[in-house]
Length: 234
Image 1 (cartoon, rainbow, N blue to C red):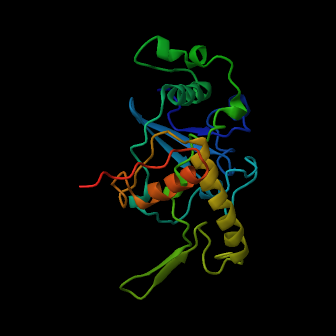
Image 2 (spheres, rainbow, N blue to C red):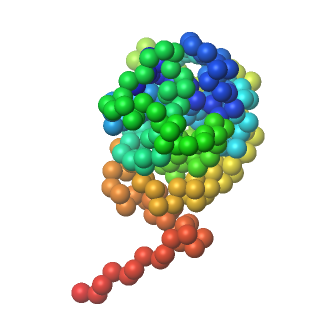
Image 3 (cartoon, rainbow, N blue to C red):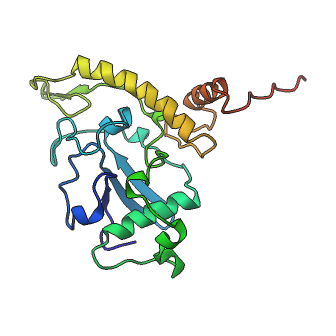
């Protein structure tokens, strides 16, 4: 834990380039939010635009970037249950420490120095294996939403918070491009994370969910996983 528990991480912005209280990095596509929830859990928030295209320029300003605004999200699609290995935990601890203003705390003296266990650290390569990204196989490619109220008023926005009167509301050209890139990202994430624990969402509590099956079939086809053994006959 540090005295800056809600931390922004962007591989193209070094900690001393965004001193406390920061905020300038938030509108950038490549910025993630790290928020430790305790000794054994960390919330990681990634902009949708980066999930759909992890090859985006990290310093580019994301679509319709804004700090405050009316919005909604589907809580059942929050991913949970994915376990990080020791090296991944060290990398998160290192990011948190580098952004600390003055104080850090840990359960042991050794844990105060993640850099000693990591060795030489390449800031821009800390997430080269995409461990900070959510599992894109469990991120739906959806547009916006619309809803009505009892007083006959309505509210609608697309996936980037643009309202119906915005000139790029539900931008079909952007959606088509991101759809192709998103499926490329799914395949690349699967290859980078093969053998690593998978996350879950409320709608897919079982480990043998459809998205897991699709990802496994892809990895088997690529020769990165062995085919499943057939079930024994009765």
